[in-house]
Amino acid sequence: MELKESLSELIFSKGQLKKSIYESTCDSFELFRSLAKEIITQLKAKDETGENAMRFEFIDHGDFKFEIRFASDLLIFTMHTNIFEFSRNHEVMKSAYIREDPTRSYCGVIHIYNFLADSFIYERDADLGYLIGRIFINSEKHYFIEGKRELGMLYNNFHTSVIDEASVQGIIESAMEYTTNFDLLSPPYDEVKVASVGEMRLDVNKKSMITAKRLGFRFQADTE
Image (cartoon, one colour):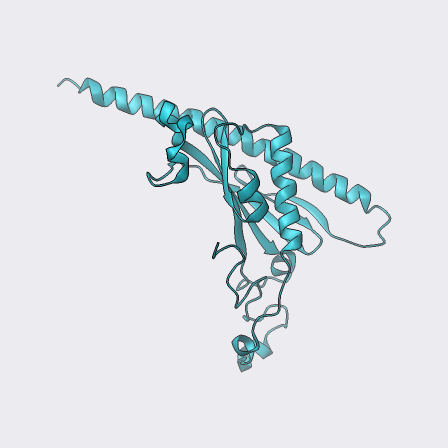
């Protein structure tokens, strides 16, 4: 039996491409990890008097996840282990950068989620968080971000944006700024006016009533 040559070429070329993208994404994620830790360290130093008693923490969860806690907010950064391609209808696919080399559309992905820190501290498992940004990184370490407000609008030049210390610091700081300005609003009264006996019997911080920044509201920019 003779193996079809085109098949072996396809498997090896696509496999090598994905390996290269995976390595670029891993390198980028480690840069996010180290700079996020440094940012938290600097914030701790600024609050060394303890007058504000704010919580600043960096928590590592292994190769593909870490979190930072600052004041009442928490950001979770995760790296997906698989490689993705933009859909044919995505705006990125229309760019000259992709048309020149279609393999540039294959990317690894880093997600940034925002939760309330208290949701984890008090084990409120029903509470909700939001995906505020996802970072697509190709084999050349060019990146594109889909996200809310600052993240989505400031970091969307795939052909010129390259992952480095300055860009990663800017992304983290923008995510923290957006999160800090994304305030917790009281939900509409009619959506929380009923509570069960079971909820009231539970510890008040662990009851099943959901807390989220925009519970009962459409998330800002979802209609944009």
